[in-house]
Length: 220
Ligand SMILES: NC(=O)C1=CN([C@@H]2O[C@H](COP(=O)(O)OP(=O)(O)OC[C@H]3O[C@@H](n4cnc5c(N)ncnc54)[C@H](O)[C@@H]3O)[C@@H](O)[C@H]2O)[C@@H](O)CC1
Ligand SMILES: [K+]
Image (cartoon, rainbow, N blue to C red; front, side):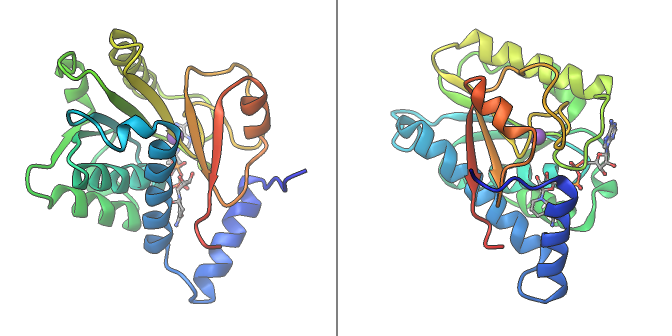
């Protein structure tokens, strides 16, 4: 059976690698985002060679999971996708690595880096293929889910529901609202979960329930 790590064990491995100077937190975040994009394109190869640019609605939370989301936004925009990020919280309160990836994304010409409040007013109906990226919370989350985050996920669900053949939901590390170290009380609506280095206790039950769970190598 594949090794399962708790969130504390995962953090300890990341901290040890950073303390040893073998990798920075920012480099790990870049690898994490790269792994998410690779998993999306492997899971849905049509998105790698689309007839028209796909869209990405990226929900970014207040921590490093959100930082991964900004990397994914930048990389998908580099591929010609139509991308917007929606940040829950204030950019100046992001932790340093996430702030760096947010700034790198915002600095891209044409980047649409928006506050969470903008999500409700956006119209994505003209985009036939796309992904909603859940980068709200990862291994740092402890329930309950804040109402504002639940509201963002609900709006994103409506975007996907409007195009059941063309839009997919992707969760970075963990579907937001679930805790890393315990079995999920409910199975969330999600098509692909991309976690890093090793699965956490939440992942095997998700896979057993039919969700695609991919573990990306981030070089730890
Ligand atoms: N250098 C790193 O730390 C790396 C982090 N990675 C990503 O970072 C994630 C972990 O990041 P963080 O530790 O910043 O945490 P998260 O991004 O999971 O959570 C963000 C913040 O939400 C807060 N929070 C937790 N529960 C809450 C609740 N119920 N209501 C409101 N706020 C709540 C936490 O205090 C935390 O500061 C991983 O899941 C992974 O996606 C990856 O990029 C790999 C490298
Ligand atoms: K997430």
